[in-house]
Image 1 (cartoon, rainbow, N blue to C red):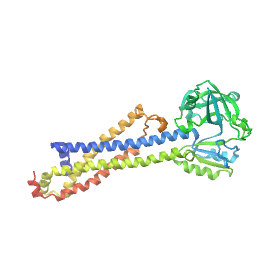
Image 2: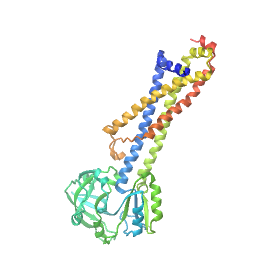
Image 3: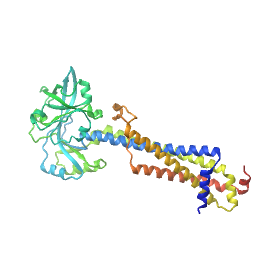
Image 4: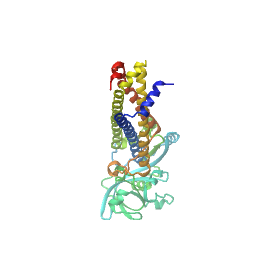
Length: 410
């Protein structure tokens, strides 16, 4: 029989000391709250990063390829990719899809309001999966009728609210020409779809229409495009895939990742990792201090018992094991409650979205939650190991107790 474990179990379960019970409960609560806060912090930060990344990359793709020139305007220069470029992209196993597009600055005039916008032209190969999820009303563009699609357009909820527009409304869009001497070219459009991405940089800046409108306005050939939009399978490999594409690109083209396209958003997301690390350290310190305090009080209250055990011949190491077993029980119980609290609150928020956010400031209307099994296991194991390693120090107090003085101690 494990004598140390038996004694520790009796101390933990059968103890009738009122003061030490209060301290033990405080220590368990400290470990529980520390673990729950750490789990929720990691889950919220990962949820933020995933949701915002998906919002941005879902609309503009992960990598865009465009002509390498000195053009710094919103309107991309035209080019025709050679067959080898298309073949390399199609053979790349890291790429989900690659679709052509073009952009052109324009001004919307409707209901006595004027709004500057960036027209994004796409064709029938465009992937609509993401926009379908964020469609507020209406439908996506229909390319089955080439003539009809030239007069259809999709706008964001932000733009619709600003210009007081709804599904089925018509308005005039004035396209700005590259030649400054040319007057803007007006085109009439009918709204067929309204979407809400939730990212101001996208919702305020873009509308979606037929790529052939830009081709006609700029007198491009049917093969000319403004760029290629690429979606990859694993966003964690973005830099690696982007570098691989650059190495195989023809000299006249350039590849740019979404991180470089929206640097402000991704810099903000990277700063969230620093905040998480600081919070994890602080919560770990709180839990450890609580456990150290509890163990010291338990040892001091059990001074008489320590003296008797030494008098019976038990070694300092064995007595230290008794209190470490006791501490392990307290930490383990705290971890169990912490998991129940953290996971319970997390899944409750994931299902109900009860905790809301200002979407204009945070790009999301609710607090996102994303649990990963490896994160939960790591936090549990790390908390248990760190607490037990640190608790070795106060348990050394056992060796300082004199059997004779301890037995007389009351």
